Length: 159
Image (cartoon, rainbow, N blue to C red; front, side, top):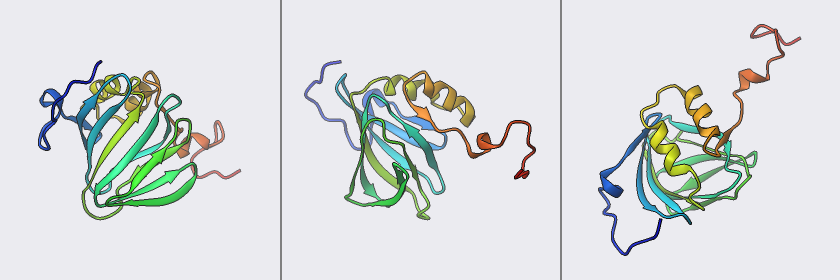
């Protein structure tokens, strides 16, 4: 895709598109092979669990609110006006524990398969299905905590 001179208006996405990604709203703002930018709204108590982009750097510019983050195993916060940098290959996660909606501008470079991923997982309500689909689009989620349980051991068994 080649960039064209234009304005993506504040209230609109490219081609009028917006996606529901597990209760979060993503609105595409810019798309080329080199980068992909989207506006994200995180309602209260929504999150994206730990994951890695092996082939992309990802950034978050916090527009409003506070995002709690895990960056390479370190807990931190992004506030209005902060730029969060997540280099490729570094595990990261974000959470809205702030008590109010959070909005941010995200972008990734290069664009990779993210556009196709968001198109594919729009309105998919099963998190396990989203994780499975994401793997095919070069986004690798960490296994859930329950996956760390010893094989055959019942939940709550610490043996």
